[in-house]
Length: 265
Image 1 (spheres, rainbow, N blue to C red):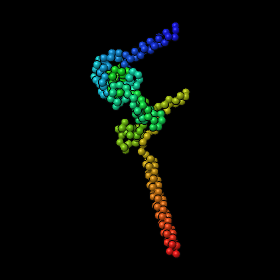
Image 2 (image 1 turned 180 degrees about the vertical axis):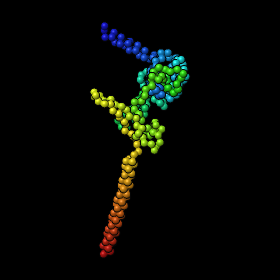
Image 3 (image 1 turned 90 degrees about the horizontal axis):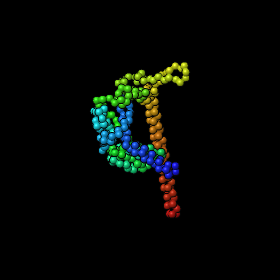
Image 4 (image 1 turned 45 degrees about the vertical axis):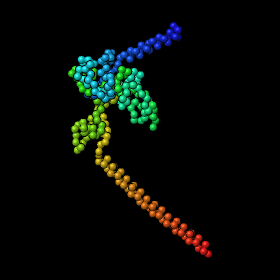
């Protein structure tokens, strides 16, 4: 086989793979209620036309996808086109554009401080060129979808809340209750053989304690003393400057008087 035949064969395989990838549209659906995600491939493009001309953030009724989706409402979260360029919220176009992006913009991560780059991004309006679309379950329908909305797909959180206000909200506590008693501990199994398992608790963040109040009071007093000392130093400096200006005026007036006396003589 010659090199040209190998090149033609590889190009043919590449075209076939790209055509197969272009026909199958990947729809990744996330369910916040269970924490599960699942990908669905819809070979029939007519079913996915319900998402066309819709923007990111819009809710779509997806009864046309099939009987198992009857009653479901999905929200468009984002996606990528067939070349892999991400959809950007706020770009009200159904095609790609090149935007000057900086720190804080989506679809861009700066490598240096203050760096800006012109990047290609896909508009937020869904079209036929979208290959992967991210969807979020807003309203659950009549039937349960295995791996997405059923009880087996529920994935509990591994860690509990860490911030003090989040713990209060989680357990419906008041400000007078002690948050430290309600911290969710987790059991850790050590890797050593024969070692007993132990529990571990997170450090509570933004916890108001007497030590913290005392430290804040101490810092406020330091700030007050610092400002008073600066005011005293400024007053002394202004007094010294006024004294130097008065001495300079006296010297200049004495010099002028001496010059006048020398002229008269």
